[in-house]
View 1 (cartoon, rainbow, N blue to C red):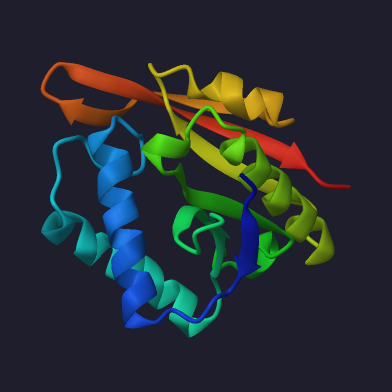
View 2 (view 1 turned 60 degrees about the vertical axis):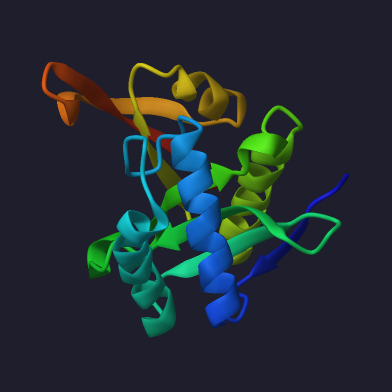
Length: 173
């Protein structure tokens, strides 16, 4: 199976719902995308709506990967720093692949497409932040990113369960 990527698809009500469902399923499968499982779509929706507002307004861009079936199975957001001195790079946020498709190369394909588009958009670098304790940084290292910083205990998943926030960087020039 292959992925078909679309940058800035029309954010219809149907696509918004599909992305909220995907986000919920990824979280509940253990994905580190802003929540701790278990979550419901009702909990994810307000955060997703805020993210969609940044896309609707224009500074942020949405990249969606569609399966052969036409369903979205992966997405990420090119988030603007909303600061003139940082307009030459973006933060990739909410990077996710449907749990049933993990281990198939879809994540690497999504990150490869983000890198390709970053270069096409004239960006000089991409950053991702990673939740410590899950070995996710190894995946991003395989995609060419390197760790450039670590905020110890910055993420509190539960009382007594603090995780590092790892900053990873990919130069594009």
